[in-house]
Length: 562
Image (cartoon, rainbow, N blue to C red; front, side, top):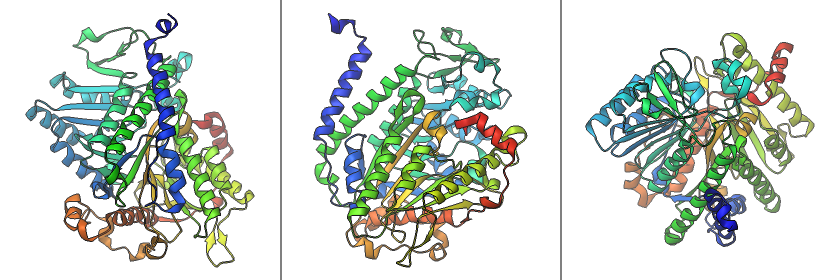
């Protein structure tokens, strides 16, 4: 009788938690082919997160916005069953992408297109809003185009009525960036806007022919679709339900009449916890049935991590705390060189717990690349948003003061090598900077053995307000790597290393797979990614920049919204 009184969703939730606890006790993976610096970390994260194992030949690292755009169009043109796109918004000038999707839908009756976007950013007033751009697709293919728009429940009540549309994103956004077609996926931090295809630097990792990984990304989006408004044409009046609302040209339908969109916190938390728990179980089954190949020295591990602070889902925080603690501990115990982190964010304002763990990890070194004021996407904006680049200078100054107080400023050690924490700034004429993520190498001279990529900016906003999906990729290495995989300096990298003509295709890789270390090749490409960023970065100059008192007052008022 007691069980019957408990809502069925809660029963499923508890069963998922029970399954995950048992899984943690029995789940173990072989880490012998990993660098000792990350073996403990990998074992720890594998016990808690879903895991995917794949060959390095199925991972492609892109370096330039034009490559991203070209590949995305190519993927859409060969779509057979599903296109699934997650972005903050779609820019008003992106007619080519929508035209290509429309064409593919018209010639492939089995094809469906799924869009997952931020409601506030996609419904701004004006004829060029994302919602209005998608209406022709919805009208033409009403049963095969599905548009979900997530609205942060943090903006509600009186504030929801008085905050101008341009500023309502300050209460949280849908921030995950996923571009999937059938079993191919691009994970990026880029949105679908012209600048992201031309002169706004980001990161782009392409995973091809990976049905399990692609299904995970698709299912993640479908999980959130249950808590998102659905876009419909005003001609479809049958979709009007409680909590839905009508704009001039479209209807935003709330899918669940039994729960108010402002009160979804507990439901979302349960759904995400159940989702991750079930994926841990399914990935364990996949790893068990592929045990021999999983232990291959050539395979990489991918671990998805969700951060949705307003729903009490904080996997990113747990993973990053574990990463720095375990790597720092491994460095203390071994006789190897000091592990080296590369960290970057276009909006650099480290979340305080991340800052604390980085400053406290005294056995590792770190280089950080932030956007210069001119490379900040808000540079030159009108009104209060024009102060945002200056605000990030204030955050950078505050961070460097903390580095100094902790005794971690970049300096030459007794060994003759440099150690500590240094801050660089990225600046390229007529370009802006939007890249984010982390790379880890066994030493400052070695190739990366781990990278974190996805949508997180690693700041308070990402931790508390936005909904983020990021990934940790762990790469195999050999014991001899400490001596043999010293990377080239940026001046030594051939021009083709950062061009679309670089030999990046999986087809070419497959032809030479028998004769080369494909894992090492992927590590080299990640190093090229770092060097492509460093190519336009130099020592931070923010110490000489003034920050007006009015800007500091603005930051105090906005608190964690930047």
